[in-house]
Amino acid sequence: MDVGTHEVKVEIAGRTMYGERVEGWGLLPDSLAGWWDSLESRFDEDVIPGADGAFDVDEVLTAPRRVTVTGVVTSTSADWSIAEVRAWLASLVKIPDLQFRVLAGGAWLSLRNAKVRGQVFSRPDFTGKRVEFEIPVWSADPRKYGRIRQISMDAVVEATGGLAFPIVDGSIGFGGTGGVLFPGVFAITNPGTAEFYPEAFTVTGPVSGFTIQSESWVVEYDGPIAAGQQLVITPYAGGRAVLGGGDVSNNLLRAEWVPVAPGETRGFLFTPTDPGPGAGIVIDYPEGSWW
Image (tube, rainbow, N blue to C red; front, side, top):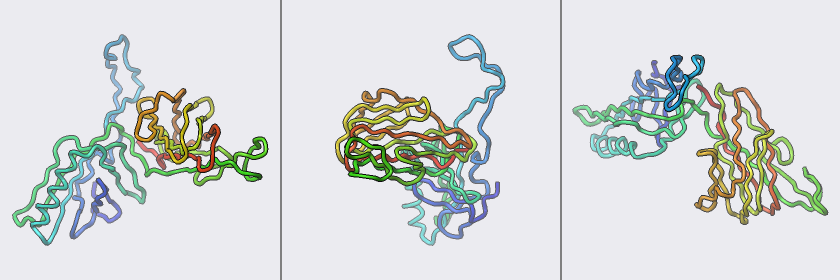
């Protein structure tokens, strides 16, 4: 794949590498091996480990995605190339999430929790001003995700009116940005070719609990969140809740995560319990997901 064009960029740990670059960080023509490939599939009948039977011959089995980034750094200073470039390249092996993403065809796509698997090679030429490098990037998830988007909603007690449902003398009013449809309801759209889950729900107190529902799937948290505190719920490991740096997953009564399918717009209902001024929710989700 020829990436010798300014329309292709790679971003690793906050550093941008360009497809066409005279000085600085550039990509070589054989860079991004594996990025453009499809996910791995298998159609044989391997016995399921530890069980009788076989995989369905029509089932697609996915493997991790592996991408090799090859490039070159040019500089007017040999000292800079050796002291800065090679040191930075070597440091990548210790980063748990490279924040790896690629701009191609006018769209940024990224890998979830990408990391180096193997060695990062750096080869300076005899002048020391030109360093070729090779970065083996690995991600357990073969899908490629768009950048993260956000939806935010407030849940506040209003004296009168607004988009609200009545509660005694006042009402609960919801305002927000992004995919907010009407009070308490937000929607997430997936324009990609693979399903994805919301990345995180961040609820700010004061609330004494809440539910997030989509059809019959419910995430329910029963525990107080003080004013200004933020509770972050992620779908990993079946659902994890963190409040002030501490794990409070025991307060998750239900953690039923529903994916947003390719081409689908899925609605969710956020229902806080006893919300006060400043209470609200922020939803992080990918803009799309592709195999």
